[in-house]
Length: 327
Image 1 (cartoon, helix red, strand yellow):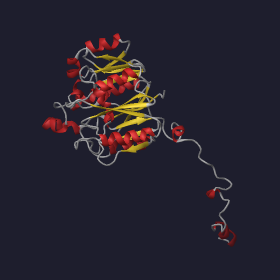
Image 2: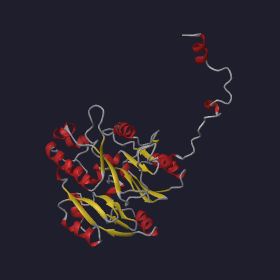
Image 3: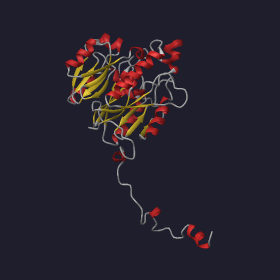
Image 4: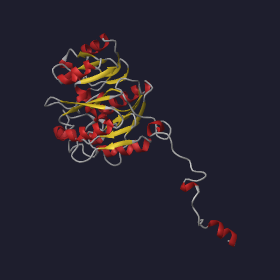
């Protein structure tokens, strides 16, 4: 190496005016975080429950649910689940999404998954600027959010909040009322500490949080109220909180009450996913409820989920919504 080469590799004595210090060649980052989603970050986020669905997160159940044969109640399932049948139903749901043009991503957990990991709706909720990670309330599900965080990072989707302290929250307790407001259920799975953290975060972007107490003995807010269009809500009679119904009415929604509680209780007729305005995916074997939906001008895409339902959830619970068209 010559003396000239050695000199050229030495750090300059004077740094003022160089690019690293804001001089010639410096390029200022000017776009906001929201503006970078879809370019620097992978396209993701939602600000409604009814706009066209673009991408979902699923976890295909496997050997981890074999423990349902021993003590299904211990892992919060309703009955023993046949793995092969459950996998076949899950594969059909994923294929139905793909056939509708919805991008399907899988959690792809590191290590052995926990039995309830397939219920992806619970493990995060999306905002227009990225995900709020859940913090499940049950010890049976504690840590599942780590698997989702890992996958979101791999997909290039931002995480805007991880709940801390004593907060417990599951994504199926929060829904977007409109671009300026969310509704959230306070109960078994989501506590006030989580609501405080989430409402504070959303307030930074001008989004208001409406919180409602849920009836004792219920699981998630999405199990009693579903938004299927910009002006239409389906609700479970005698279960949906009074204040939640009046809030929907005050915000210009028509609230239609599902007519057959037996189908809602036994066959997961209410466990739906909104695919777009007045278009849903629902569980097969619910003729009365399907006819009710269709009487409201809702197009129904029907999938089987009888075996999966034994695990205490169906299509809505299985589906983590990652991206909808923003409205």
